[in-house]
Image (cartoon, rainbow, N blue to C red; front, side):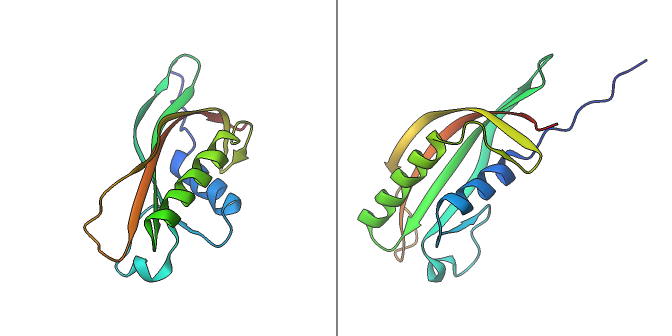
Amino acid sequence: MTVPARVMPDAEEIVVAYLDDALPGTNVVTELRVGFEDKLPVVRVCRVGGAVSKPLILDAPLVDVDAYHRTRAQASQLAREIAAAMSAARGVALAGGLVTSVTEQVGPSWRPDYNPRVHHFGCQFVLTIRPAT
């Protein structure tokens, strides 16, 4: 008899919901749409790697988080607020998943952008997530 594979919670969905609550007044998205610079501040969340460990059934996604704002100072501040919020995400249960750990992989850093209307900082985190049930 084969055991069916377990579908893991969506790491992007968890981080978007968490940061949306932690950063009031900030648009938290997974995709940048045309004209996003008219809705600043914007935070973009994107899973860029990681894998599910077996047999423990834990997901360890590498999540890239970008902060966009009107000035370099504002983008830097927003990225540092993201880092502070993410460091407190352990134990958060959202979107069917439970965050059991968060490690800052790359701290807030300048990321040049092609769009002259925005300033862009970003950071990366490795989370450990398991299904909430």
